[in-house]
Length: 73
Image 1 (cartoon, rainbow, N blue to C red):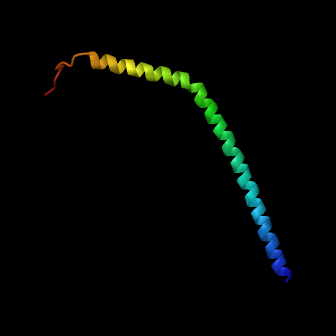
Image 2: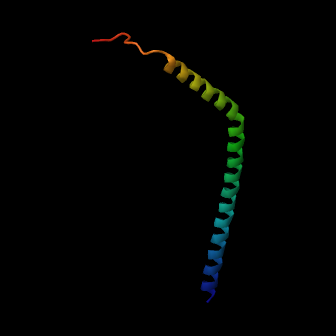
Image 3: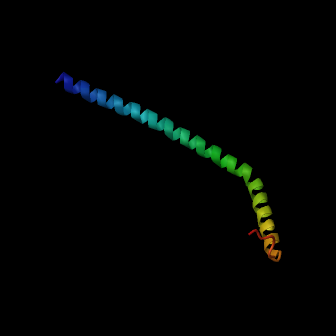
């Protein structure tokens, strides 16, 4: 009977260790999520400026008439 109680106690101890580890992972994920959001907010103006510049370049390229250019044989 004592072995049964010891095995149950060890099982609960193992579950407690897993619960503690999973809680630490949960906290790490929350911290990483906050850091990613902060970085995203910091980079948004530069991202918007690059996106606008790319759009302007594409409009300029589309406005030019296509010509034959140089053909290689």
